[in-house]
Image 1: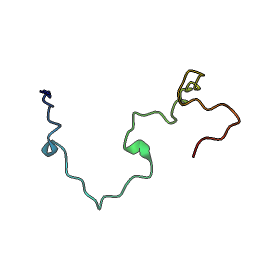
Image 2: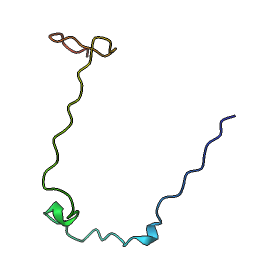
Image 3: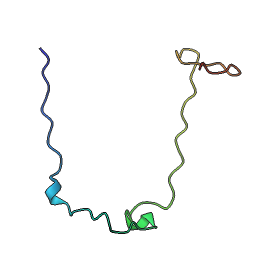
Length: 65
């Protein structure tokens, strides 16, 4: 028998103001989230696949279609 744990309910939608679809969207995203930085940090460098990786594709060979 497989037993599943209970999941806590999400936030109550009645606790949030209603969304007005006619309200204009601001051009400046800073108005929506003023505490965020102007630019994003650089993306992390992802490791290249090694010879032991099953999806390793050697350089110079086309990828399978």
